Structure formats: C-alpha cells, structure tokens
Length: 149
Image 1 (cartoon, rainbow, N blue to C red):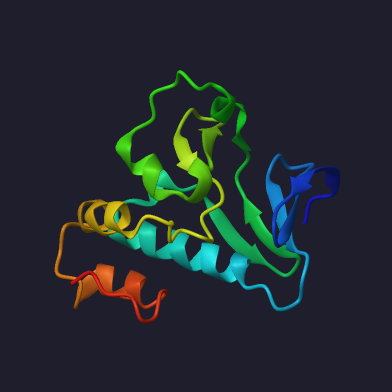
Image 2: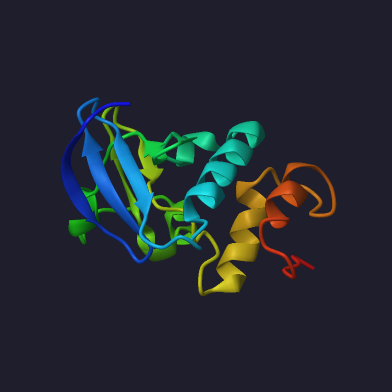
C-alpha cells in the first residue's frame, strides 16, 4: 500500500488522504459507518450495468476505500453546464479524473432528497428496465423499503 502524502479533507463520516501512488484513501471516522462498503458495492453494480464510467473507480482495501483521484475544482465554476445525471448525485459531488472523465467521487449517499428526480433518472440511468428483476433490482436492494412503483 502506498504512503500517505497529505490529508485532502473531512467528510461527514470519512477522512480522505492523497496517497503517494496518486490514488485517494478514504478512511472511516466512526466504526459503525459503512460508506466505504456501500460505495464499493455501488461501483461494482454500476460496472456490471455498463454505467460505471459515471463513478470514480474504487476498491476496498484493508485500510479503507482506495479511489482514483478526482479534481473537484470544477464544482467551483457556477457557469459550468453539467450533464443531467449529475443531479442524481448527492450535493453534486462530481469532478474530473486525470484522464478527463466527469465522475461522481462521493456516492455513498446516492439517494438524494428529491425522490421524483431520482426515480425518473434511475429508470433511465440504470438500463431502463423493470425494477423487479435484473441489475436495477440489485441496486434497489441497497435501499430497503424503496420502490419505483
């Protein structure tokens, strides 16, 4: 595992560090937090569904979640026109990867405050399919008690 170069910042439940390898390590601040596991699972499912390019690449490690570095400075540009799917990401937490892809970098809280936007977007975003079977059903299992009907 690469050495920590510097602390990038604190989130609600995690601390992010830049690693010497150029990747980011997200470490839980509280033992009960499952954000790293949820984020890894969402990325895995998104890859299976062919929409993984919207999410920063990540994997679980013994130390936390290792994620590709994302430049978040574009969030400071109020005039920038973002694609529609950015509305589905909590607090519009998106940025540019080193290879220029626009991705979500914090998607553990993928369920936004506006369910109508999410329901419509989710149907389109995750393969336009019946929510009772297939990859969309796998994703909805992450959110018990929620239905798209």
